[in-house]
Image: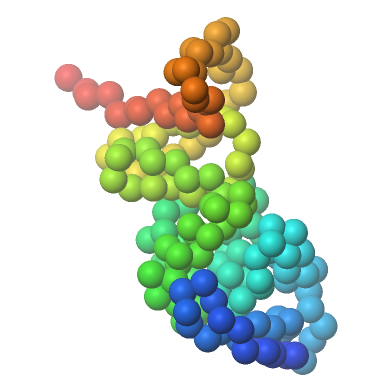
Length: 168
């Protein structure tokens, strides 16, 4: 991904590092629609559009609904010639999650997936394949449990773990 910055200003990110905040454009071209949509998306969420957030935001939000891990997004960033560390990817995913742009799904207790669809919906986790997919529409709950006294239900995560059938 060839990104060139114009109208740059130095800003401090949430980790104390100086970053370049910029209007991002292609080489000598006006900003494209995807970059503008991502800039607006970040701005609407109250996030400064730093170079890292904008680059990762384009990978995440301009490719349709996705479930990604930090490691997978890092690999995509490297393949797109982005100069980012894995720590930056983790930090950015956490910032996007806190801003409500992503939903964290802990499928196996070790690895987290980040879902670009933040609505309440169930998932299948394919054990041994490290894949998370949405369950097709039609799953419904007839009754939710009551919250404990003094508490409220914050969210509902339903993950159905699947494994390949063993052939005998």
